[in-house]
Amino acid sequence: METNNRLETLEGEEYQLSVGEGTYQLRDSIALGQPSLPHSEQQPPPPPNPLDTRIQAPMVGTRLSIILFGPKNGMTMAPKQIRPDSPISTGDNSSQTGSQQDQQDSRSSNSISMFRGPDWGAEMLSGQKTQILGHDNPALAQTNGKDTKDSRKAKKPKNNLVKTNSSFIQRVLPADNLTKRLNDRNAEGLLVFANVNRAFQWLDLAASEKSQKADPLTKILFAKAHALCHDVNQRTSNSSHIDFIMGFSTGDIIWYDPISQKYSRINKNGTINPNPVYDIKWIPGSPNLFIAAHSDGTLVVYDKEKEDQAFVAEHADVPDIDYNKPQLQIFKSIQSQNQKFNPVAFWRIAKQRINSFSFSPDAKVIAAGTEGGRLYLVDPHEEKITDLFLPLFGGIQAICWSPDGRYILSGGQDDLVHLYSFDEKELVARFQGHRGWVNCIAFDPWRCDGRNYRFGSVADDRRLLLWDFNASMLQRPRAVSIRQRTSVSSNIDLRTHSESVNARLASNAELADRLHSNIEVGPDVGVHIAKGWNAAPKVPAIMDLQVDNHELSWIGFHQQGIITSCGKGHIRTWDRPQEHHSNV
Image 1: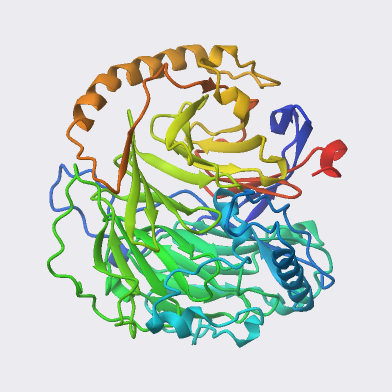
Image 2: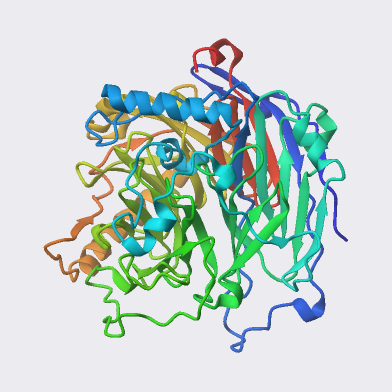
């Protein structure tokens, strides 16, 4: 039986996050209803090999996309943090004027500001005059070059979701008073999109009545496919239109406007790429283009408004990818003049699944992490891999950039979070504290100032960890000299777990050196082998607390606090400390 959402009441010190600036108080806990099991005819076929343990219908935990629906008199945006040497820095008067004009346009159109925890940097700068991918291709000029400040001119999906007869969509349940609930929202607050296996929900976390927080604005149940990832386009969305995309286990992609309840289906039945989509992002600054990371190691650029066509590689002579020769395979270039149909571009960076990717704040670099544990830096404009970071152990589950673009975080199957310096192109610290695979990491931009940084991480161990670091910390040779501050003690012996991780990584260091010795370093690709276990500082968490009874899958920050979600659909929000809220 399919269950309904419910608002939980959770109290006590075990639901408080104590850190140096104060205590984050749990505000709401929403348990999303689980969809019923598919009918027998909808079950995926059994694997032909009885010993094959691969999951036939990929699933991930609940992930969120957040939008901040503001009052009509304007928005409260996150503080802009741009590197002084960045080419899109707002240090000159002309840039400041443009930024102010954009804000005025935003207020006049009752715009929606959006930010997503793991990729806040990319969203923060998407309103700036960034260099849009494919800007110099005349075939894409009409698509990418138009001014989208007035998003009312932007095209919307063409199919009615509620009245659809598509076999891909099983049921749609919009709220009876959807329009009224949206129009009655006079205060600034969060709207949340969440996937729960075959179901998808749109929630209002700032509803005036507390009971309405658990009552979805819209609920969609898909027949066979599981929604694995989704994203919102900040540049084109306003109070009358939201550009939202979802990637599925079948390879299908849905472009959806929840306000008009219209949708379009892209890569239908895997016409272009039949492999599951594990991550999906709008290209910063572009009204139409987005990138989907498929499980076959490919990054595919799609246009939301183009029709699909069975894909045939334009470059038939592309050599097979060589594990020891990192290079981007280009099956269709972003400079191709054949842009009538999707895809706009088709690249492969690895043979392993791409679990996560993220745009740098200036949108010039893509960081992508694979199931094989490799971290690739890709220049999408030049269509080439610029750097490859090689691991000691385990695949990468999550990637994110610092808001100023100086650092890259990766988390994964070694139970650690790794910090890389983008300028120095090297591992500068390891963050040790989790006892399970790290599934999501996110910077808190309201506590990052270019000198001090705060980020959070969640993992299969059901724990939320908060971390602080600064440049002086990273210069210390050993983490033993870094004092742990206001950390909540754990019921699990962290020392025993740390010794186990240390021994495992130390034993893998020699093996990694042998495996990586065959890597051919080309003139255009920097290959960076991970430092030995004792060669980089190990930074402890400032806060460590189990916040759920299930594996955590997502974390995000917003101006008022922290949001997490788990594999079973629990969404929990914490308010920032009151005594410090005015300083955020």
